[in-house]
Image (cartoon, rainbow over all chains, first blue to last red; front, side, top):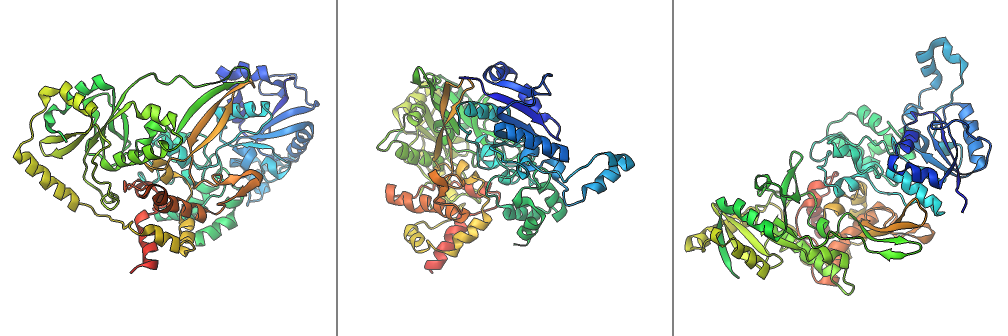
Length: 259
Length: 342
């Protein structure tokens, strides 16, 4: 069997997800042994950015028209497109304030110099192209990436958890941050896969992996309100990593608050 | 039943004698308020006045995640090397948790015996310990506040000593191995025990009426209560994970990068998860959260009764204490009853 041709790309983001790939130290030789990596600018020069791909891994958010063009080009060349990281899957932190016109931010940050580049409201990949597999996380989990690649090598999509961080938190028997400490943990509405990493250190889940399917955001808001958190704090908390996700848009949240 | 007495100051010594019978696991502290069963390193680390552990004993016999077998394209499959014949002693188990093991034994020991479960179960000795209920406990109502069997030894606190009931021949061996530590039970000890039992009985703050609940649930199948509960429930799965008798699991394959081998895994599942009743073609028997919550109650309090003659709830209070949304099984049952009975 020919090795699948693979491209690994980064749009706007911190490049942390590509770094996770390089951090698979023990498995790196198996990984490059099983894939024919055509493009991975973070790791190697001499990329072939014209060839047809079996799998494209794309990190980051689309924030410029050039990135939209690049993404569409990658999509056209790739049989499968995998979004890696919460930015690519949900928009991530760059998309948390999309209700404000980006021109305002550019002016504030760059002054007149900002006029040289064009920006659009930051969006996840799925706003522009079909995404075949989404691996969320800020950054992605190494285990999920490796399992995902293994499944794709078998010609199948991996089975990712479709339940909340609470489930993994309880499996590992960590004391509940929400019930025991009264802190604003987003474990009940955030998709699992990290092994409840933050609660394992006694910290709240900040929702970096994005929402689990079928979340009950109204109930989460209710719990946080009862614990005395303000509506502004709750909204900001809920919308840090996945603001473009439908259950977290401002109008939905407003309705959920009043339900 | 043979009953002997162990003075409390001899407990540490008894624990060190027990090490000859296996690795001791006992309640220890985790975080500020929680407890877990964990390997006991020093006798001083034991927390005998705990009320409940986050996870019940099922974690030992049906681990949250386990490899059932490894497979390879050429060679077929092989079972993973188990931790040989390592024996365990689980010390300080409360009556509700012992009852839950009896329930799991029934379920996994049915027509198709679950070898994975019993290979571990048969290596564990159970040493019970009585307890004082807190506001979440309702084991008196479920008839699981006392055990007649299901333990090797069972310790009851009578101020300065424990009365030790010997439940099995293994338990008897344990007592004999530490013969000099035990004393005979006196008339005064019996009086103390009776007094303590009455005190314990009077300290329950929660109760639930489960009798005739299956019929009530059938009558309330379409009740608005399920809708309301679906709005409250986060579907986070916490109650299933911490429930001592929730035993559902999902089975799936994980593949290795060589594209030729992998592992078959089983992992705890919950009927509260959206994918639980998802079948081929994208059809979902319980797409609504309300129907999933209803299913969980129906299985515990109605389906299980039809199949095994008793509800599978043992009144441990974990679901109530750990639910982030504060869903309270007692309130739910009371609401259901109030619709039907005065």
